[in-house]
Length: 451
Image (cartoon, rainbow, N blue to C red; front, side):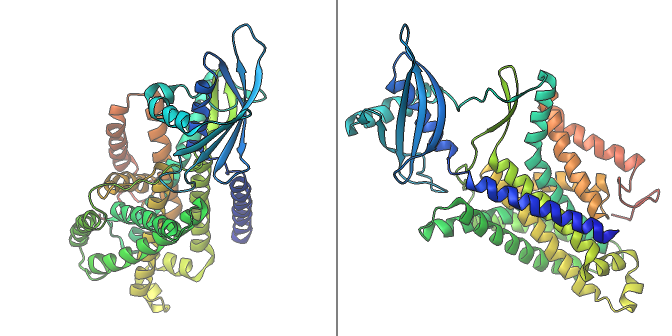
């Protein structure tokens, strides 16, 4: 039965990977470049109503071609085109710098381009003049309330993936040792810093491919998260073997503060932001003038999170590590008698938990652009709440709890005052600790393990 479930999981992963590859093939249009190019159209057609028909790659390197219709008063609509050339592409900060502009009548002169950039594109009026992406009249029509609800679900996908991976970090360590590591939020910040460093290495090497930058960032985040977690956890959890968990808990608070200060010194207090990539909205459905959309980067972030979650569930169910982890979590003495090396297993669990935290930091950078040296604390605290709600000693429960927290934040922000969102979240934690202290899928005793 487990084998059939694993097979289904890997089929889902394979299908998801295929979708990501297919989507990557169609992600050649940069959203920032498309916005800049569209914003030039009203200046090229004063007084006309612009309707963008299609945006495609231009024949020259780093160029886009926009096909559009210009409707002048008392004149038939004109089918026109514009070709915009940019200074760079990919992860470069200069990718939205317009260096050339041409129409079907020929190139725009250098002086005219300078005046256009200086006194139009760089002004609020120029930004507001963007006519928008091509509209798709063939979209599915939905009731307004359903369309709004669907949009909120799609918006919550990256956030739920981040919280789920960060919540499972707490479960991996607590389920094995009965101790909470409060430094996982800072480990997510470490992963975000490693992601930025990996992307910077790719740029310095002369490559500006977003896929290569994300790949380098992913490797860096996993390695940095696993290394810092295993080393820090060795001194704050493995070496502290007192009966009470409080000394270890206090030690992890110290580790959290040390990592925060370490990041401040290494990357400076100024947050380094990556430029947005693959942020052009894909329309899915509509309700009158409201379009339900999803960005490619949100789909990729959610896909990476889902793949990591399914892979982790497979690891815990179908490998020797997972069997040893479950045996030691149930009865450490019996597992030790059967040959399970407890200290080594804890180090491996710390490394795996740190890798998941680092991956969540990588997803934060890819989705939102960056994370400050102190920004991981709030993520870690909310992920801990998700782990407790789902069942802090259960890996599937922690994934479920993280999903619930991400969805709860999105829905609350959409329908209720955002000022009360965190208060409601902490209130929900209190309610769970009173009526369901073991979480949804965790321990079923009246009181959980001492924390």
